[in-house]
Structure formats: structure tokens, C-alpha cells
Image (tube, rainbow, N blue to C red):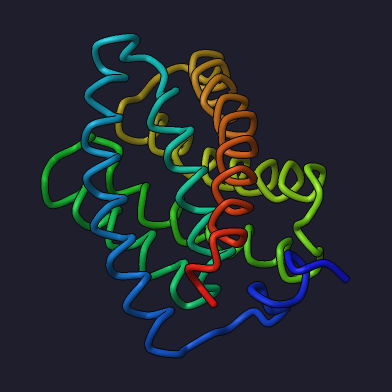
Length: 185
């Protein structure tokens, strides 16, 4: 098997070594900063959809799971969600908590079953992750913003498709380059 499939990425669901846990917290802080900027860019471009934020969310969700597994994925995801809630990033921030946690778990379930050395593996993982996460946010659009269901379906659909496409491309490219660099060896 190739280096991508064996050396760096274990097939285990859980990884609790110090490197993974510290890496999760550090990536959580970076994730917070990136999402703060991404959501502001989205607010300027089109407040009804979260394209830049969706792509960055999908990318970080995939990367932290691939690099550090669980519980690192949930730690990173929830650091971002709780800071978004505390900072008032979005009225939907309470729904980021389940979206981020469940999205991370979804990516983990797919990635521990596949080698993740093919584009199709990343596409599948991002598809499941983005659908799960955007269902949570869609519920928030209905409960908090009281948007009509057709509007929710369009807005969530746009964010989901952008997250799947962008998340797949960025996660695969960044992950492959991190593995090639040997930084995690």
C-alpha cells in the first residue's frame, strides 16, 4: 500500500496521543479565526448563503479528522462552535454545536473505512459530512430565523454543494501535501 494509506493515517477511529490533542486545540484556534473572516466575507457577498464559510468549515472538518482522528475532530469543531456562539458570529451559532460535532463524526466514520487516497473517498466523506452539518443548520434557519422551507432548501443546498466541492478539493490537496511533507512523521 502507498504511504498515504499506511504511514500517517491509521484506520482507527480514536487517537488520544498528545500530538493529536494539542494539534486539535491549535487547529481549533485557527479554525475560529478562519471562520470569523469567512462569515464576514459571506455577509458581504451574499448574506443568504454561506459559501466561503461552508467551504472552510468542510475543509477544516476533513483535515482535522484525517490528521488527528477523534476526539481531536470534535475538540476542534466544538472550539469553533462555542467561540462562534460566544462572539455572536451568527444567530445560528447554537446550531453549529451539533452541526460541527455530527459533521466531524460523519467524516470520521467514512474515513476510517476508506483509504482516503482517492478523490472519490474524499468526495463521499465530504458529501455525508456536509449533508449532516447542513441539516442541523437548516433546522436553525427554520427555528431561529423562521425562514420558509423552500428558502431553507435553496440556502442549505447552495452551502452543501459549495462545501462538498470546495471541501473535497481543498482537503485532498492539503492533506496529500501535509503527508508528502513528512511534517507528521
